[in-house]
Image (cartoon, rainbow, N blue to C red; front, side, top):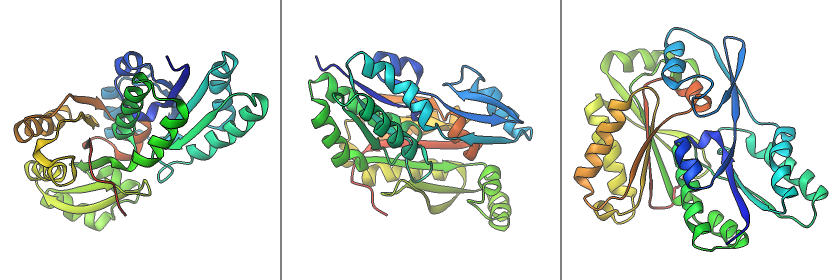
Length: 294
């Protein structure tokens, strides 16, 4: 068995049981709410429903990237045990975490020159980043070496498609992703922006769809358009949501109807780091397919 660690940040937004079952290690990001710091620890410090309710009630949130010292403290016990590490980070298109991880890698490789530490920019977020980690666990379990796994990841990570929609523009306006004027008009007309993560790992608005039911159909249309083998898709699907489970379940139901051979569909919560920027009302859909473009 390959004696190396595959690792990510908690912003991969998988269910805790999947991290455990797939033997995927993770380091927690952190955030601040109304001046108090919390760990982004899969909803343990603050349950997700409580977090999003606080945001709706006007709580101020701020996020912090994991620093190099934290990464060193996290990596070192694995290296002391004689294990190599492949760590994937949250997309460099939305976070500076990659730089911290690379700085820590350089320090650890100097201290443990006989060990390997690979750092990968996932160019993805939330459960799309998690879906990549789940695939790496498959390949590790099939016996792939850490060197080949690193090469595979760099070659195929952009095939992890990532699409989002939001039914609540409040926090997109607050964060400057949507202007106040277009946000007001969009809210009045029931406009739901449809976005995806592009090949640079940045969140890009792709279209404006009127009405929740229509945007749910549209995001599933994108899976048919960009997914492996269209409606013959057989892979896993990951869906994450910020306090809108019913909407996520509606997407999953439509996928099962339209893609009869689809594999496992996992629904999880958008974590507190990414959720600090989206607020409630966001659904994200992730599947394997065509390589992402700009």
